[in-house]
Length: 336
Image (tube, rainbow, N blue to C red; front, top):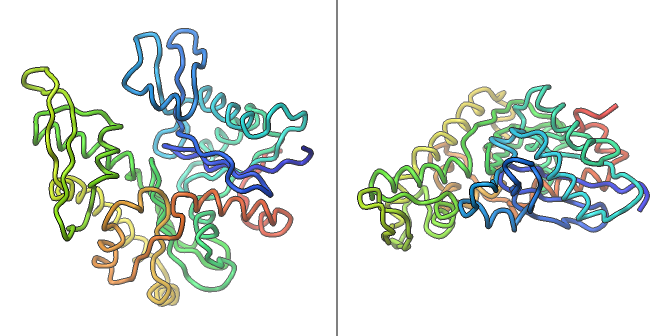
């Protein structure tokens, strides 16, 4: 297909690809399984995620992105190439791509993303900041002279931004998001229960009973791990109240980030935000009670966007669908 345009939400935990005219066509974990010595790729995406913590010594399953930026350039390039090939097939024409990046990335990190995409097979690569894409995907008209606050909580970063007239007025990118919540659960259970669990188990626990605001009814979940005292397998029971105790600290760090951005926001835009509320996007926003906690701590109504997980990818798609107009004013960097 000639002139194929693809939007990529290249996240720390998952990657979503939007194909112009078709919508979101791929959603895969950002995980690569490869040979430790030869660097030969075994699997990418869901199949590779299943291997985390279950591989023999010569195979490693890694996430090539950490905290929203590339930590392993070559592996990221191979992962993007795999995703593009899966979406485009063996098309003769190289696609044009737009990739979302956190608002706080440096020029060096931006260049690394662009180079990785071009080396992976893109004809040209452009970047768009995640808060902008998230706001568009959430249905906000960012072109108006009106303040809107977006809090995009992904796997590696939480991007907090105030947007007006199509641009970011004040923003902050925190290295506290879904992965940090998982790590906190692992540490909490290790310290409180003397049991070691894996990151995937912690993530499942977070999704099932995790909360940052008290639940009306206490929920419980059973998890299995390795007892640190005996070294043997052990089954324990965790309650939602214990999850609240574990997750409250990283959640409050996000609240503090929102407060800091609000403190730096011009008064007129603060008035708009008070009226419009705070929009939460990203998979991390689905953690139970995060919207209630933000509302309580800031005094501003916070609500979760519809289809929060896909907002960034959908926003990128909307930019693609109007590439000749809207994209020119939003795209930050292009490959020359």
